[in-house]
Image 1 (cartoon, rainbow, N blue to C red):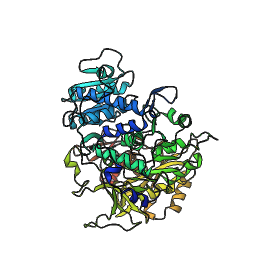
Image 2: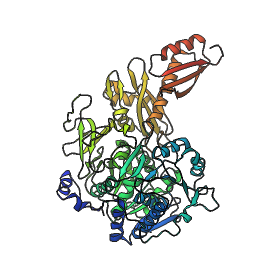
Image 3: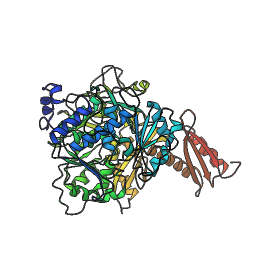
Image 4: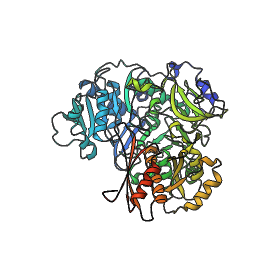
Length: 624
């Protein structure tokens, strides 16, 4: 088990844990060891509850730790019978978080390798990911469970040559050739014993996750048994997860937030994980009923990405007793200070930020769950791992001083061995095992890590690096702003200038002029003051709920074009804008302007020509 060796409150407690031999405090060598130990020590205690809807009466399953181990054994036996073994075949999962998923996902890793796919991706991308690792088995949902997943599975035999079988969860009717109903697949498979001897070690790859795709095309991340065991251990130690915890897991299982942060980490510590719906926190009714679920299960830990935390703040019933909740966990993006403050004021629950990546099984830094969280910090490193901050663009490796921002790097047992395609490791993993995260941050004097933004998200205005968080923090303090995001908008002179997108609190109208005055007053660096402020109903997010900045950058391009049209063309001219890519993946912006003269169109094309994108300008008349 991974329950705490000692309560962690400061970095000295982490150092004290590290004085003990690693194999004495981390005893598991593979995931089967991990779940077997928990079943031995906490067998009759509740382990897993999966709800089919926010109605607590619709529990799809409730298993204790002994029963969960039995289901893992049965799943592993089924996959081994289907030819899954170390170095042979792999199982792809394309399904929402149905009750059967947890045991199937772990069972596949006990037998061999599992790949968790985002079921919201299109069929071609799913096929591409399956082909990348030669998937031989696919687990998906019957049409009665999820029509979207079922329809995407159709045709995959043609698109994925290695695919041999499709296992269908919830199948209730005859299936096409090559498909197997899950109930038939597990028939005759033992829940008492494994039908094979596990030989996996901590270094054996057992899981593949594709990156979240917030910055571009997904990559396949390889995770080993040891990566995940150490991540669970790190969460257990610093968050203080133990057998008394009941944790609401609002993340999807194609993301390490769902499988690790509030998933395997809770189960390995002997705690109880509650999944609020098959679609995590995406359905609006889950957010509406969230605090009822928290009360019903007497949850001790609640969780969500910052966008979810903002939504949950608006649904807290007045007078609700939440004293049984010891912490709220958030990660996946920097938590805006105003969002955190509003949540704590509405709920009385302290927020504990965490920081991780798919490439580290979600575990890099954590605010101490038994200590005092620091607003704006993601906390201390995991035991037996290292975090350093290095200066950027110096040519030589130079460490930053405390409070000096730089590029965050991580090394430790939770760091992945590399991408499935080794060519993608360049610039990410060095020969000494240091992982370059791409995040900008600094270490405090007491070794807490503070993140300030993404290297790729920096807005570079005439050579001046602008951290979007410095703009967003000011905007989020303005009355009526629920959440905001700043991105680069192309500019002919400065290269890039800040554009700010703001989402109003429900029922609120934001006064743009007053907000602009607020930004001019409180953003102290003149280059960081937004050139444009746009109110939108919601921020674009990934399936996990992370803000999807590429979509915002596209909106910033649209805003730039609209500003130029307004400045060049006569009143009444309207631009229709489409953003695409050419064969070299360069942005191509097609702009059709209705109500513009040929001279205005020519002037607009000349005005946009210096920008880095390609602009194609047409009018509403054939000869324009």
